[in-house]
Amino acid sequence: MIVFAFDRDLTVDVNKGPIPLAWVRWLASTANEVWAVGNQRLKAEAGIPGVEEMRIRLGIPKKAARTRARRTRYVSSKRLKFLAQMAAIPEPDKRTWNVNSKIKRLKMLAQIFPDAELRIVVDDYDLSHAGGWKYYTPAEFVAVWGPRIKEALPFVAIGGAR
Ligand SMILES: [Mg+2]
Image (tube, rainbow, N blue to C red):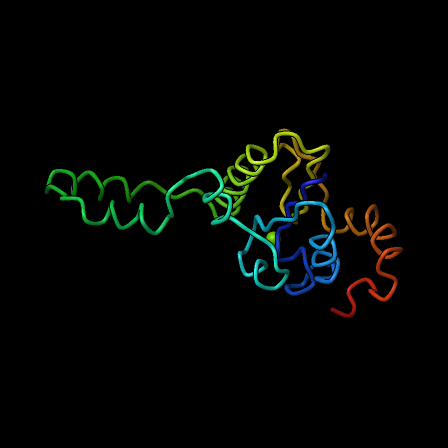
């Protein structure tokens, strides 16, 4: 069994990517595991699980529940001052934040499927440093996996019908 982790934006054709959504949907219909690690809209579009399902599998509480718990906590004036100081520290840029959160998601997935014969991640961001994962850019994935998928799905053209 292979684990496929797909990003959405600039990766799949629902948002300017080269990979047909039909490919993702078809892969999900095989005996392999196909998960959404980027924009979670891909879950509904491709009919695949994503971050929430990872948390459920690993018994990690929902993000909403954790945020709510944090929000209701009493905040002292001293702490408020501290938080204001913290806010002055520049936040990491969106790309870094995105890559870091995806690495976390990939770690969760690897934890869920420790015995997978192969783990493949496809993203327009470079995730080649993700340990235990084979990384493809969307274009590389089309070049390497496209012919195999098209053989099974001859009616799907690159960037074409969904
Ligand atoms: Mg993307």
